[in-house]
Image (tube, rainbow, N blue to C red; front, side):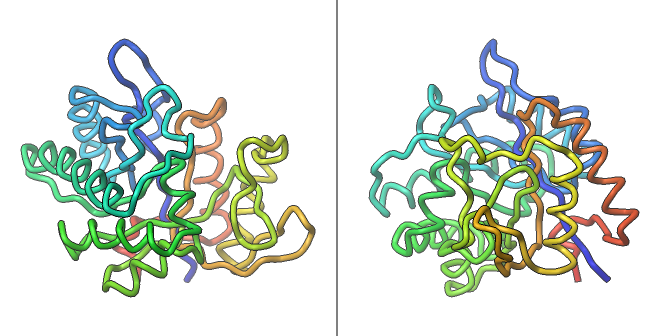
Length: 255
């Protein structure tokens, strides 16, 4: 049986600014990555998003990012491994407080944006992030780009990992995501995005921008909650996955 987790980056509003359709999208995903206040989010948003996810039976994870509200955590910042270790622990701790107050447990940790992409190619940075997650709770699941250094570091330290793939992003021949600075980085057509996901889950491969299939493992698919058609896409992909015989289930319950 083919299984996949659907995760979404949520809780990314802050102050007077509202980003995404969290309440609606939570009806269609199985794991929520909740911003922890560095790249987005604030205490009130974190509390409300935790409650919304719990109401929908969605598993909750921390989504630590770089301290860059203005750039939404998508700009590279030259941080040391020690700094990465500290900021990941700090942000996991922030979300853990809200989960504990509600009697809930954290399922996973998924770095955000530039931190995620920097770690994907850096053994040293990935080791620091994996160590931070492990030292907080070795039962947490570490989400990372399929085949990346972050997945390798998580497995090496003894964490359960979830290899993540993207529905709305194009890939390069080395398995990395096409940088957002390039015009062909995003897949705008829903049918093409769904087709890419089904191929990744069933065939264990994705067609790169260079035209050849790149092998990868797909444990969880990211749906970006701040996308222009995020809600429609979430509905469609859930329906199409079911029709393709792929069971949608939280990563912690997969066999």
